[in-house]
Amino acid sequence: MDEPIEWVGGQPEGPRRRRWPYALVPAALIAVLALATLGWSSVRSTGRSLGNAMVPYSVSVKGSWSSDDKVVGGPISMLLTVQNTDPRQLDGMTLRLHGLSSSWRIIGAGPSAQISGPAIFFARALAPGKSEDLTVNLMPVRSGDSEIQLSLSVGRSTSSITMKTSATSQGTTLTAPASVREATPSDLAVQPQLLYVRDLRLGDDASWDLQVHNAGAVRITSVTVTFPGLPSSFELTTTRPSATVDPGSDSVRFAVTLDPGDGETLTVHFVPHAAGSFHVAAQLFLSDQPDPIILPSGDRAVNFDVTVS
Image 1 (cartoon, rainbow, N blue to C red):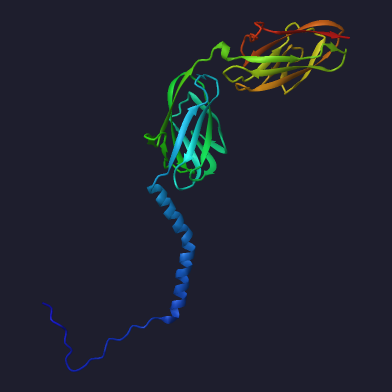
Image 2: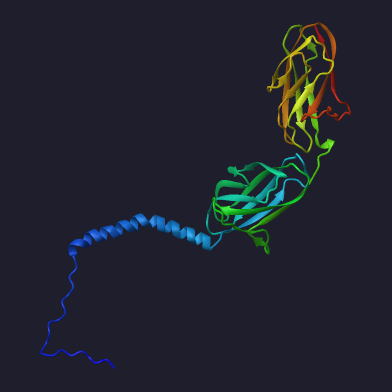
């Protein structure tokens, strides 16, 4: 047992009180306050980051394809509806397409999207309870079956969001299966309409306007208009939009890109140098194909007559 301490020889002097360096208190207080003020935003930001990493965000996602028919060379859209079911705001989202093979190309996305390889950043903020429709435009370049794996993260981070696809299904990866077929001749089709003036004046500039609508299932990368048997007295001059016209040729190539449903008006200017009645035929070659297209009428050319006087 420890013995109690006894003072021997009378009452000793009590312990001296410790003195504070009062002159230093104001400076130390100011320093502490300054540190608290300057460090609050960084501490708060760090705390938020740590909290987000420890408690992953969660969203509800509904995904679909714009069409069940997927064909090589035919643009198709991946449609995603994302609802923020988390109490925190999503300051932008990054969608990652994992394992995207060389059979697919990303050709666009929206809204407010930035594409960097297989990662697509959508800049719009999403408040709790709000929804956003995301679109990813893809182009299949090879046929076959594939599965595209999708994941979402907040902002530009790499921490995946938990995605709920139904009341009983959730995870950090969403699978989009796709079966792509080869294109057939019927997939490359247009609906042309020719606008022209029947009566022409000798030596005056004139034009033929060809309205082309992509009625097929694949992208058209060029349209070549050929006038077989065009009399040499018809001089092809300029076009709109700009096209390749070889001197003395009866062929005009427009380097236009038309996705399914798109349309374009192709204008060929010319000058007639001889009077008379003439029969004109116009054939269309799509995407540099060797054969002209077959029109809905079953013909391979648009035929019309003009008179020059």
